[in-house]
Length: 482
Image (tube, rainbow, N blue to C red; front, top):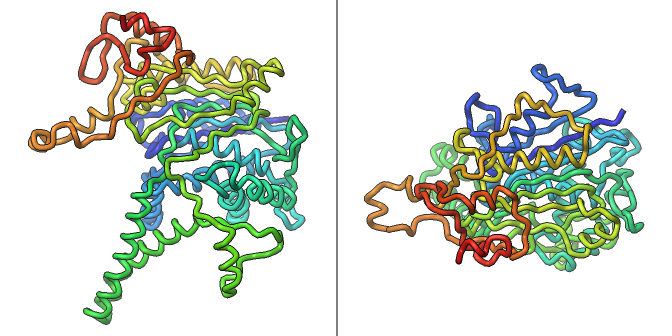
C-alpha cells in the first residue's frame, strides 16, 4: 500500500526537540504531529517523516570538524547542499512506487525543499545503484547517489542565469537518469525525473545563501592561516610548530574544500572524466567550467508545473534587507494550470508579522501570529489531500490571534547592545533596512484586514495602528492610510 513520505526542513540554526520548552518553528511543530514513533499512533508503514535541522544548527554535532564545517557552511551558504542531500537521500531510502512525497520548509529550509523539488524534477528517484543492483537504502553509497544529483546536476549553473547553463544541466540530468533508472516524462512529454512531489508547503522562503564578502573573507583567512603555519615552521621549528599548525591546516583545508566543491564543469563526452594528473583535462574543465556561487542574484524560482499543490506563507513586515523573499513560479506555468482547471495549483498569501512571525520559533506566548500561518498551512494540506495525511491533532494546538505581538529583529539587535555603545553609534549597528515590495493586488490573509481594523496593536516595543509602509497602495487596505 502506498505511503506518505514527508520531508521537513527547518530554518537557519533551528533544531527542534532538544528541550521540552524550547522555541519551536512551525516546521518542527508539523513534523512532531506527523511523525511515527513510540509515542505516536501513526503507522510507520503508512507514513514516514524526516526532519532536517536548519543550516548551521550544530547542537547535534559531536565532532569539532563537523562544527567547524557548519560554521563555514553557514557563513558561505554552501551548507544548503548538505541539507538538500540529506533530504533527497531520505526520499530515495524510503520511496516505493506509488508513494506520495510532500515537502515542507521554513526560511532557508523553505529554499531547501524548493531546491529538492527541482532535484526531483531533474533526477527523479533512482531505482538502481547504477551497476545493475538495487538502489542502496542506507550508508555511503546512498549518500553518494544523492550528492551526485545535488552537486553535479542541480548545482550546475547555480547562481547564474538559468538559460545560460540549461543545456549542460539538462544533459547531466539525463545522464543521471539513464544511469540510475529514473527517467520520466512531464505533462507535455518533456524528459524529466520519474517522481515529483505532490505537495510543497513553505513558510517565508529566503535564500541569503552567500555573499562575495563572506567568500572573499574565507579565502583571505585560509591564506593567512597557511602563511601563519609556514612562518611558524620557519621560526619555531620542530614539535611546537607542528602542534600549533594542526588547527590552522585543518581549518584551511576545510575552507578550500568547501569553496572547491562549487567549481562545476561539463564535458560533451559522457565517459570523459577529469584526471587530476592530466593538464589538458584541467584546461578543458576551466574553459567549460564556472564557479556556482549564490551571490544574491538568480536564485532558483522555478517549480515544475506538474507538482500538484504549492503553498507559500509570506511575511509583510520583514524589513531586513538580507531576508528578501525568493519569488516562486513562472507566469506561463500558472497560466497553464489555470487552463487545466487547476486554480488551486499555487497559493501564495501575505501575512502580518516578520520572518519568524510567519515561520515560528519565538517563545510560545509570543507565537500568536505564527499560529495564523501554521493554521492556514494545515488547513490547506487538509483541503488538498483530505484524509490522506495522518496528523496528531492532540499535539498541534493552535491559538491564532490577528492582534498578536509582532516582532522586529532590527530593533531586537539594538536592544541587545549595551547603552554606552548605542550612545556612541546610535541605531546604526543593526541589519540594513529594506521593506519588501508587495504587489497592489497580492492576496492578503483575512487576519491582515483584522489587524488593520484594530485601534492599535503591539509591534515590538510600540503599540500603534497597523500601517506597514509597503501596503500603502494595496487595493484592499489603501483606504486605511487616508
